[in-house]
Amino acid sequence: MVGSNSKSDISFAGTFASSAFAACFAEICTIPLDTAKVRLQLQKKGIAGDGIGMGLPKYRGMLGTVGTIAKEEGLASLWKGIVPGLHRQCLYGGLRIGLYEPIKNLYVGENFVGDVPLTTKILAGLTTGGLAIAVANPTDLVKVRLQAEGKLAAGVPRRYSGALNAYSTIIKQEGVRALWTGIGPNVARNAIINAAELASYDQVKQTILKIPGFTDNVLTHLLSGLGAGFFAVCIGSPVDVVKSRMMGDPSYTSTIDCFVKTLKNDGPLAFYKGFIPNFGRLGSWNVIMFLTLEQAKKFVKSMESP
Image 1 (cartoon, one colour):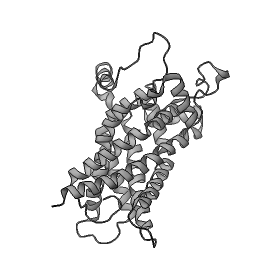
Image 2 (tube, one colour):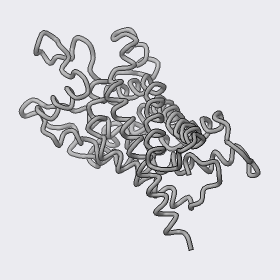
Image 3 (cartoon, helix red, strand yellow):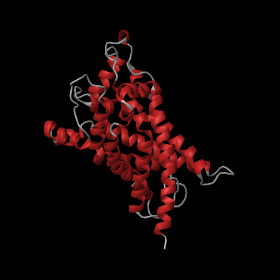
Image 4 (tube, one colour):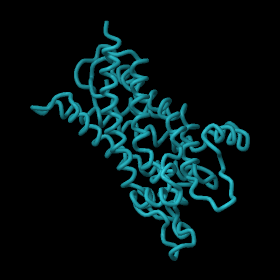
């Protein structure tokens, strides 16, 4: 179990199912904040105002962006990308969390006793995050493309009619390889964020449980989840911005090109664009996901126990 240093007490299939379920539930609850984050990250200086209000940014702040999208495009637009988002969480969430304990145990060795070092937890998180997103990249690409599409002028057709149409259209128009667009920054982002989330959750939980009066309960899971979300956003925000821009705008030729152009045109603070919605999203996502995961694992353990 994430946060323990013993061998996992449920099967890999049980861990995978619990992780996928917890990740999907967190995704449904928090995707409006993710849609706001993507729009803020894709917004560029000077051209963001849509010709209104002297070039003022169209989207301002997390709640302002959520409000603008809901007002202009309808409430349902905040859940744009939920179908590929759930595809992504089943694959990515299930693999990165499900593999974390086995990989961590592989790194420390079979006969290891005591607290697993933080460096090993980070290494295990980097490994499972990178492996999982390499499999799930197409789902991430489709999710970002659907979220990036704002309100269209009258008579202008939507680029994609839905998630499955987006997969087939991208393959038809751009080739199968296009589904792995942005794989470089995406592997970097997800390996880093996964390590920050799982290793910090593991570490914070381990530390809290050593404080007198604290037990392995909902409060501990809540505090550990918030800590995991905060570390993940601080560390992962720059690669997250580059990933969103590369997936949402095909004019960038490479990760370096996107990084340099963003730095030159929008300044260093652009890499922390959408920091508040990103923390609102990842902080709440981690709290919901880890709380759900701990309960789902308890349920699976009771089902698997003879």
